[in-house]
Length: 129
Image (cartoon, rainbow, N blue to C red; front, side):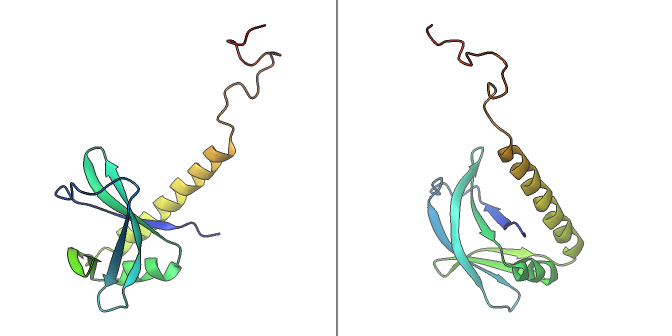
């Protein structure tokens, strides 16, 4: 199973971005057809940004081959990123994201209850007897 690839874009001037709000974006590599989807508002510390996930392998293939990426919000260009000579780095980025997702899945599979494997009968030390 392929996990989603995610794309994040941050802008210090984007103070109005709200956490978890949806923002429709268009991402276009070179002269390819634009990819569209709802990005989610996020903050990395105080830095506002947008996160968008893609599960189509073609997205990463276009990303790896592209010379540039145009990002639009409401038909207004908000970013132009040069991607020239970035193929190797983008492939490593995909490998890194896959590793992070594997670790996240493993952590989610493990119980988060520290009392789950306790040998004591009463797992709640604060419970009244």
